[in-house]
Amino acid sequence: MNDYRIIPGGVTAPKGFQAAGITAGFKSSQKPDLALIFSETSAIAAGVFTTSQVRAACVDYCRQQLQKHASAQAILCNAGQANAATGQQGWQDAVESVHLLAQQLKLDPEAVLIASTGVIGQRMNMAAFREGIPPLVEALSDTDSEAAAEAILTTDLVTKTIALETKFNNRPVRIGGMAKGSGMIHPNMATMLAFVTCDAAVSTHLWQEMVQRASQRSFNQITVDGDTSTNDCLLALANGQSRTPAITEPGERADQLEAMLTAVCQHLAKAIARDGEGATCLIEVQVTGAPDEKSAQQVAKTIAGSSLVKSAIFGRDPNWGRIAAAAGRAGVNFQQENLQIKLGDFLLMENGQPVAFDRAAASAYLSEIASNSSSENFIATNNSNDISVDQNRTLTQTVDNPVTISVHLGNGDGVGKAWGCDLSYNYVRINAEYTT
Image (cartoon, rainbow, N blue to C red):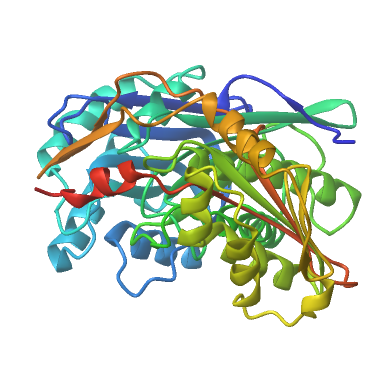
């Protein structure tokens, strides 16, 4: 049983955190596009970043800062331009944005971390920073997490936020999170963008280790389209304002905090997968009986990322052969005669052989999951300095009712999960003319 509960507030739920989101002019649509998360006191900072060789300036900047100073007080994020593949000028723009915010907040520039999202190859609109940062700081509030979450979106259809609370010595400890991501999702570190706030007191090395493990069990286990972004970034701040005893060594309290951190990251990760471009349903792949956790995760993510599996789910086709084929090419050794596959409650394969099942009922199961929300009317509209989505209806964001695929490999102790979404016609519609 989890010893934490869901609470409102997102990234501002933990004590001592504020947030803001405004329209600064990075998007021609005049939708919100500049966000700020601010800790009233210095916080322990941890980060996990893309392993891509083509990286945005913000990624390299944050990695360098955290290697020198594992602390921060503010996270600034713009949406509209990715500032990736922009050369030395892009780096200078990133540094200038840091100094602009630091001056406004009266902070040392080393206390500011940055993130960007948008079209690759475009420099950031520096005029928008220069004009937007003063009103952004003015808008800071301990109740405005949703505004910040909205201001980091690009092709996303919904904001993605969560906050959880537990108790240490009868005192509340809280973790909040927000994320964005819809396309170009196949993280090899964390996700498109995710920000986590925490008011526990925790040592630098433990916090970084917790963030890395939580990322591996959440954001690194999602896929939408098999494409890793140049801007993937998870930043996490812990400011100690809960006034609970500091966690400096592994143990019960550390495990409790990490479990809550992992739950926050997994919720955000599933929300990203559910909001995949053109998707009609979330897919959860559960793998058991693997040699170890890493192997189970590898098989799960291979299945979740299979274009053939994703297409079959969209077509409401209970095609177990595609699932078996994806498991077989995942690079994990197992005996075919031990393979078991289930779709929801429908047993499709046992002991490496197909079994009779009600195909019509299995197809109806897939249709029922997707019927809560369909993306057939979603049309992406993009131009050279904006990314937005024309929504003809509201998406029902359901991360607790996925299509479940259960795969058992053998007698090992390894257990793993991965999340993805179906592959619809609209994914191509959204991405075919992304910059034209």
